[in-house]
Length: 465
Image (cartoon, rainbow, N blue to C red; front, side, top):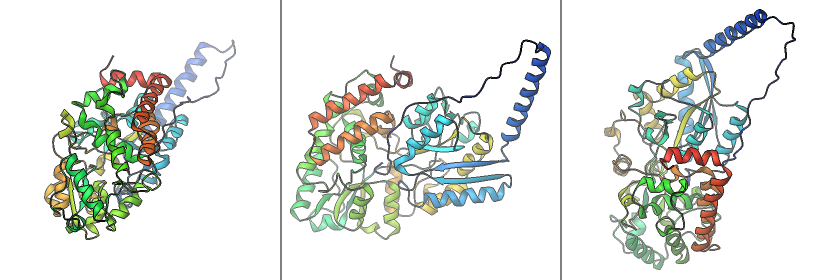
């Protein structure tokens, strides 16, 4: 978005339809019982044959490359290795596009066909499918002793069960180019820690002919990111994040919407990329990596790729500058980002669970870190393996006790049509913050009315009745 993207969520489930055969009146009860028993036995035998942890053809829809460059190559390699070790299991990895990740799975869910293992962004994109009956709980399939080693599983808990597997930790650090800071007369070793410092640094950088902040919002991601890392600083608790969608609070309240004026202010002062509304996040990151801008928000995975490219001496990383004094202002924004789960229609649930568990074993955790530089979401990963000072700083941020990625709590429809789409107009200068507030509030209300079942489930999950 930037790489942790949330696309549109197409609602509308259709059940499995089949023909019902009518038996004639002359059919005896005994015949019916015999037929029923035979069908049950056949069904049980098929289920038993397919539900074997050491046998099965598994299709995995994988997403992660834009968060963590190199992750697709890694998972393909691991799937092949697993099949070599477990001769009865074949895993086919099918990479997913960011733009169609949610829509494609919704289509698969309607027909109850497609992947055995799928991936969606953490919390609401996963839990919405849980509530719709499209996901199999991992609790019961994977031992509690194993699940207890996984990090951030609380992001995908509903009814006391864990529904999806975290693969990596994803923090959204604020990053600056030390060389450009020095060129503008700023302290290269001291990035802005407050909003006033950020504005002052932006002014000096702009005066020196340097673009202050490189961001791309063609896909609307910057609006959602900004709400998560800046907007929540005005709130006092995670419950307040939930309340605005559960109908207990209103987005028009200043504490929820103030961030839109800050975003507009950056745009009006010329501190953001001039083409922010028409370029992708990846384009902005390339500009930053090429020294065309002094600051950006990005992912751990992209920082890791810059470190591998020899940019360590240029990079400063920290949490987003503090703008407010709410209880969440001290939180960092690490999340498990993408989550892997087993579909409810999979005929290889045990084999799929065994593969997910295998991905969290020490050898696989280490191979993931070696291949990508990103941090595995598991307590067993040793921080001693992190030698680079920039990456050590990121790991410290990612593992501090207080974490929140607010977008996880946003209903997908509200995220795609509200926080992302509406904010595009703000950063383009075509929509005023006050107009954006009203538009986002309407999107929230539309979701509550149009998706009453999802709204009811959300309120139950959020503890709001």
